[in-house]
Image (cartoon, rainbow, N blue to C red):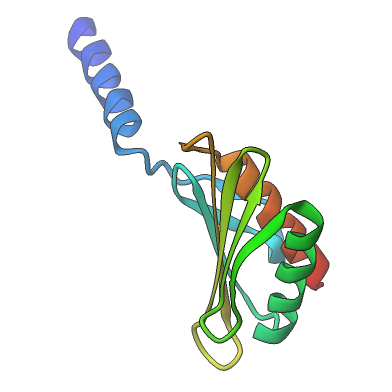
Length: 126
């Protein structure tokens, strides 16, 4: 019975390892976001779209070099730390905007960089 329990637990852990979509919470309260993949953090906020866009631009210019920018599409791509960050703003409702930040370094997922950018943008927008 004990072997079956240990085997089941190990299979459960392996399943999460291969799926790569274990939810983790980022920040707390209004700054909170969640991981949607190994390289992406996203969250919804009641901060107006224009304020969030301005904050994303400001933080992006400080952090790296903007390669692509589309204010109407809510898209930023920047080169930073031997990798890239993609920032996406999506207006969900009149009062709600989704902030989605993806990061890769040396072509590998970098969730900590995405988390750092997400939190800096949200803090700047407050």
